[in-house]
Length: 204
Image 1: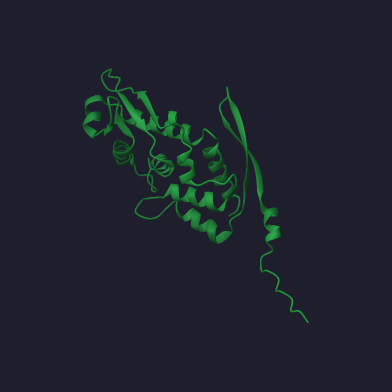
Image 2: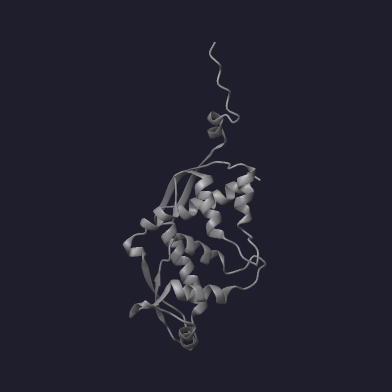
């Protein structure tokens, strides 16, 4: 007599019944777009591991790793990975030149260089520390190192003396956040990731 194979402990055929299908809207009023996405409840243990990245100690979070874990465990369709997303950054999005509102009527020009999805996400989230402390200086220094460049010398990072002379540092941070958002949402990824974060709050 043939021995029956034991039934699996988890009925994987039922997993899809827990999925949530969403139509994600992105773009702007002049050019509205949508993307179809599917989210899956990752289970309570993984959910708590994801949420824990919002506070990793020492007034720090790892927002990008939280989103990376969401890519791997929550967004079932489309499938995303930072490495693939970085490869899809268009040539026209790799850099952006902006004019800032400086001090005493100055209008400094800077070049911004996209640092990759992981760093862009963390820089966007790090303006305020976990306990609400002002982390603007640390973020500006990180942007100087990895994002901001001289227009006439794209390989030369900015430093704090540039902002002392010209002003406009706060304006530059806001411009960087807008730039990152434009790059990361040109195909709806950022909007999809944010909707996945909202979905996770429904799974608690």
